[in-house]
Image 1 (cartoon, rainbow over the protein chains, first blue to last red):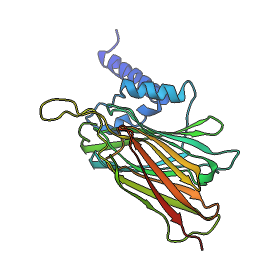
Image 2: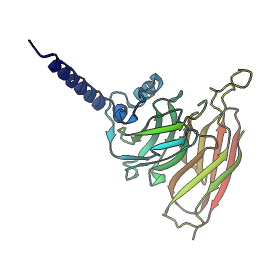
Image 3: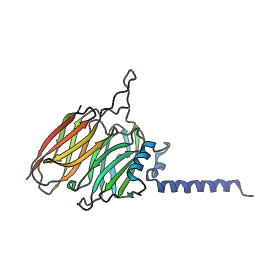
Image 4: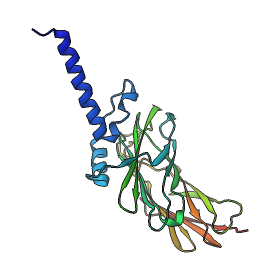
Length: 162
Length: 107
């Protein structure tokens, strides 16, 4: 007869394995474990917007850098810099940069449209965050491939009434 | 309605150089999710479109949502093609377009 403790360990292992699988499938779950007591659950609006932009493709990680504060004291005013690694030539450039929030009432924050004239794929803006959540940046290359970056921002005072 | 549009350019630039263009405008960016004291919803009024042109040619465009902070700040880069001026336009939900122009000084 199996020891009940063994069963516990096994089910925990199974759970961890499925959690890892979920993280591999969905980049926006990637850093959920850092969020502490907050349960990070992307909103349905986020899932819809993500689905609409990415479809069935797998976005490439590591080629877009997002500079966001680790902790935002005021969610109404979060400075953000996005830089994508791209030669910005006529043959290979970033044509759009999308900012999505996983838990704002309105998931789509902004889209910036670029051309080779910009020479450097870097934009800055300031965004609102209703609460602690992941900010997902998608950079769309001229060949249609998507680059992705997910950043967790802890929000002390949420942006009111976003 | 937007007020006090500003464009910040480097003091001087060389043709072929990559410069950063910083823009700022005063606007409430009302999200449409808030209510006033009587409980009535405050209608949404955000700047939804931002267009930057250099010598009449579009060089950068943005579609903004309610997740952009009040008084939207947007900065982007451009390789200087030659002499000219920037024209930037912000359009909000009330249909008001606010524009600003700034000449680029070349050395």
